[in-house]
Image (tube, rainbow, N blue to C red; front, side):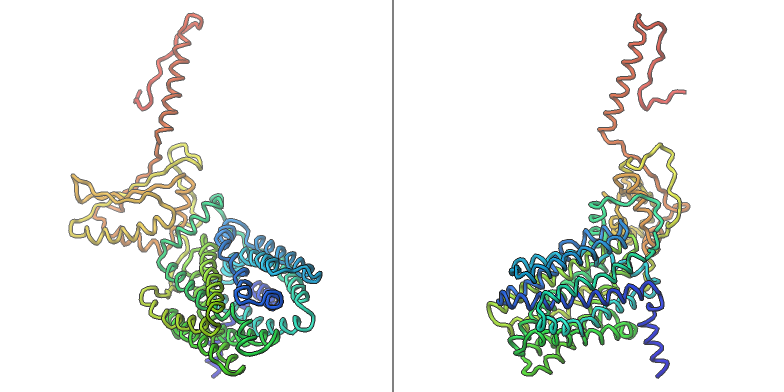
Length: 572
């Protein structure tokens, strides 16, 4: 028994031994309490001032939509800027918005659309904060502890969820929504203090940071060309769309199916949170016993059955039990998706991949909240919940084509980390380019098919890391000679692409190189492309020089000038 407990403790609680993780975790726990209390206040206030199902569901949409719209921008900022500062700015913004919302509500000036605007702004703060916080986990704890740390972050959120909504319901019932909004504002202070004191390790940069637009495009490109990440994103989006039915319609479940008020709504959210706490405590242990795919399939089935049970439950107690199961499935699946994204991404892009994951998941939540609200408004609340539950059950076979990866053994450290930049023989500045790379292979005829297959996989890696215009050519006169060709727009982009090659990518490259039958390794030649505009400028300069020399032979200029040789002529 003691041995089993020690294994569970080591798998689940080890990140708490890292001081900064523990401090941020506690401060985040308090802040999450405030956010959930605010959420209860906003949802119940909307029921009071605009009681239709679609307007109530839009509260959830207004909170999650900014995450879909701004996550990629926030992820690029977190990878190219100081994550700690970005987290601080987001917390201060949410503090100010919460104070303004509390004041407007207290003065009785709040309207339904004004409430949605304030919750949208709070969602914008959360969108800026989320990718930086999630990607900073790898800076707070060692890589081996990242899955446990992600699960503990989910645990903290769901501990808050067990009590926060119930407390929020009591506050709203006794004092009104304005006090719930004020409590949320105060809850940000502790996290602001902790982040202000954190001395985040500063990564060594051998190259200047990417421009924001380029960084966003690079994150999208990396995600699109990473099959492991694509599978996670699609599954997480579907999970978000289907799971949003219970989330968005919870106030109506409390009012229409259970027959309660604000306190009942808080209690139901607390039941969901209780299940989520159990799920967060068990997910690290379950990941040791099950594959990630099996865990996600089990969670989808459990959530689907819980949604259907909630629709038909005749008693308060059975509704709470169903929501407990939904909560456990929710945190088990989302923490699995989250940790898989972080472990499947190298450090240079992890903020952006986490942002894309959040954008897809919360985009699914926003879309689903609107969709299920419309279904509930047009047909019935029960129909909406049952349709979402059936959708969960039908989503299980997707694992045959979009399997959640088992990727803990991926080595995503850069193989060139800390190495000095290559020294070219030409006088090149950072913006010189395009830089063209040719790699020459000598391939036996019987290996041509296998070589091409290996090169297509290598092409994916090259393009994912920033190579452009990739092509593979075969010599017409010497069929055993093949040339791989690609380019980078600038010298800096070329160096940045080289630094992104990981040890896992190197294995793909070495497999392609293993088909080479020439002496040594394949021959690599780098070229600085001279575009026509540059050649025209050189020719113009040459013409000006010729004119200057000719003018100096005029009688007004004594002496004679040496002839100017045209560019490219070899003179000794």
